[in-house]
Amino acid sequence: MKEKFSNVYYDDIGFLTKNLVPGIRVYGEKLVTYNEEEYRAWNPNRSKLASALMLGLTIIPFTPSSKVLYLGSATGTTVSHISDIVSEGMIYCVEFSPRSMRDFIGNAKMRNNLVPILADAKQPIEYAPLLETVDVIYQDIAQVEQAEIVLRNLPFLKKGGHIMLCIKARSIDVTKDPNEMFKKEIETLSQAVDIVEIIDIGQYEKDHSFVVGIKR
Ligand SMILES: C[S@@+](CC[C@H](N)C(=O)[O-])C[C@H]1O[C@@H](n2cnc3c(N)ncnc32)[C@H](O)[C@@H]1O
Image (cartoon, rainbow, N blue to C red):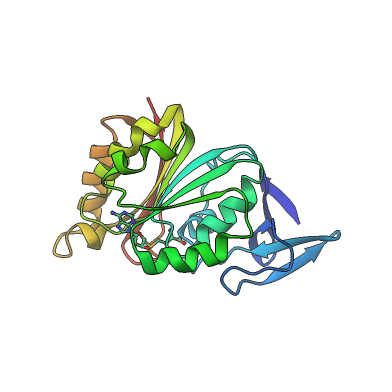
């Protein structure tokens, strides 16, 4: 097993993270023991970040002490792997579906680096009092104005901090060419962010693109 990025590992079954809560699975993932440490297999069919890694993503901006704002945490599949990576950091997890949040809290209660926030990511003023400045904003929400939501949350990100955005073209306009939708969202983001990597993750998630940028 090799450490590809800080706290992100790779072996012949794919990417893995060291389990912060040994013995506990979050979404039925495979657990692997190596040198007496337990790792969780990171399923690229369940997590767009894992699919981007499988497809050659070269930038993982997380360090063990990173602070992260995660928009669209759902039940916590990808959050749980980022939680393993930022083992001494903190993830502020915004999700507006009470049902998903209930399952998320069930999954998250054993991890002490997660702050669940039931709120609309389009209304950052609602949760601003709960946040500190973060190193990374990660967003995965299927909405019409995906890049616009990142921009609204950008005041929480430190200058030089990273954004990671999963763009779902069909949520923007099902009738339009996905490439046009990706271009439009990237143009919007570029108002405040330098785009440093774009990965087409369509082979795992139809009409999706994964974008990494740095706040100017
Ligand atoms: C594709 S799922 C996220 C999957 C998750 N990121 C993962 O990889 O484990 C998108 C989530 O975004 C949430 N969502 C959509 N619009 C939102 C908004 N305006 N504010 C907060 N959450 C939102 C949905 O309820 C859904 O749970």
